[in-house]
Every structure is written in structure tokens, then in C-alpha cells.
Image 1: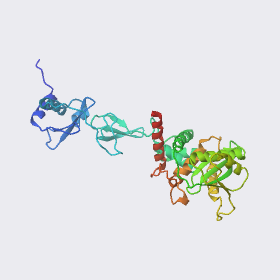
Image 2: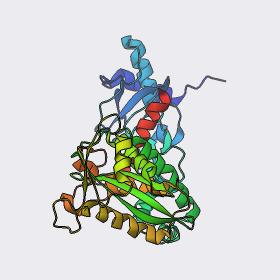
Image 3: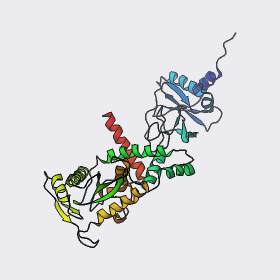
Image 4: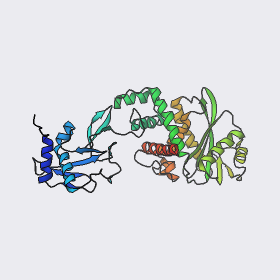
Length: 377
């Protein structure tokens, strides 16, 4: 039986002899179409495999005539094919997971996530999530955190996701998100150094923790309104006061020049014990009345903000609840302060880690990036 040559090989040989093939600077080739003079196809070598943009290769995944043309042309002209060099692209460009090309197209959806197809190597892949192996979009997770710290209950958040996003998310899952990601972001912000005014306000408020009344010690900076500490204690003595100021000193990484409180009690000894090495800051006892020079209205206003949120939570379940630090995170980095011209306390303190349109997502992205660096090191 006579040996019949593959027609793709025959046509590829004709193209290599009669058409003008152009080699690009990145190692790929432009090959003219045999049927349309205005059409050219890009042929590339990706991971030692040839790819082409023509319909024959796209639909059949077989070596097409344009690939054969490049093989013949390379042999005749003594050109050694090479893989395309990396391209310079915008930060928001989608890269192929196999060949790193940015020549990708949208290719439907899978499990609610966008699917892409690479035009160079044919690889299909889903849109990469900020959180690896996450079932839900990170923005959905951040929506739940935002709603919760704005006063919405877990069950109402679960219903919100069902009504507006068609997602069946149990309220227990919402709670796990609150716990996990608030801790991740708090670990990151604990490494930041705020620029504070040097004048602190301290006040205590009664809260219910697992059915038992306890004290919540709040310490904030006057100039930036940044909440520095939020500590829980069963009693109200100088040791409890000391622990609150030690925590504030740890976050601030600085020593205040003045501390304002609303009454004496155990606070003077707590301040003295917390700053025994650095020297005791000036202690001012606030005089009642918002218009007085040393009024403690800043701390009282902070207490009211915390009190409004705890009321809908019906108290906290434990001293180490993630809600305590999560509330401080929301107050400092997410919530715009009415007295700061639309800025957050963190922004007022020179911390711009969450200053974009979506503060939650920006803070989460930087927190996860920092955690990944720490794991690698």
C-alpha cells in the first residue's frame, strides 16, 4: 500500500516555502493563514509542546499545519525554537497557571467562580482565590465580618447570604470565619507601630461574660482616637489596671506623657506599676462635663460604641472571645470616625494598611501575605 502523507504535513511544508513567517522577540511565531490573507496565527513552544491559535488546534488538539510549518521553517533556517520569554503585564492581568501567559479568555463558571482558558497552551483554570482552597469567595467572608461588627446577628447574616447571594451558609460557619480571620488580621496589625499623640484616656465598663458581670478596661489615644487596649477582669484592682496599661504600652510601643481617667480608685497604683521602669506619666483625673479641659468624654464615647455592640451579642461567652479583639480591629481600621473627618483611627495614626475602597479585603490581603512570608522564613 502506498504511503499517504498526512495532509497537515503537506500543507505545513507549503506554508514554510511560500509564506512569510515572522519570529517574535518573545520566541513565538506569526504564521499566515492559507485561506485568509489577512489572518495570522500565533505558534508558541510551551513546556516543550507546540500550541497554535488556529481553529484546528483549538478544537482537535492535534499538531496543525502551522506547527508543521514552523518545524520545517526552523530546520531550513537553522533556527532553534525557544519558549516565550515572560511578558510585562498589568498587576490585575490574569496569568495562565501552566505557561504564565496573559492571553487568556473567560470560559464560563464552575461552582460560582470564573473559569479561564489559555489561548497559548489550552489550559483551563479557575480564578485564583486569595484564600487557598476556600469554598467561598473571600469578599463574601469579609461581608460577614462587616455585617457582624455593625450589629447584625449570626443567624441574620446567614439569612442575608441566602437572600442576596443564594448561598446556604450555616451561622456556625459564619462564627468560624469571625474567629479565624479576625485572629489572622489581629496578628498582622500587632506588628504595626502607630504614631500617637502621647495623651491616653482610660475608662472601665461593666459587661456580662458567660452570665457573670466583669469589667472591661478600655484605653485609647486622644489625638488619633485609636483603641489601644480592651482587657477583661473579674475584679477592679491595681493589678487589673496595670494589665490594661501594659497591653496599651505593648500596642503603642511608646510611653504616654499623660493619662486621663475619670476617678482615682486603683488606677494611680496601676499606672505606677505599669510604667515603673520608664517613669510614671502625668495622671490627670477628669472633671465631669464634656466642655471641661480634662473631660474623659473620649473614653466614655468609646465605651458607648462597645456597649451598643455587646448589647446585640447579649454578652460574651469567655474572656478570650475573638469578639473582643475583633471589635478593636473594626473600630481602629474599618469604621470611619465622625470626629476624624472620615478617617479611621488607624489612618489618623499613620497606618494606611486598610485605606482603600474595601478596607476589609485590603487588610485581609496584607495579613495573609505577611503570614505566608513568616511561614516561608
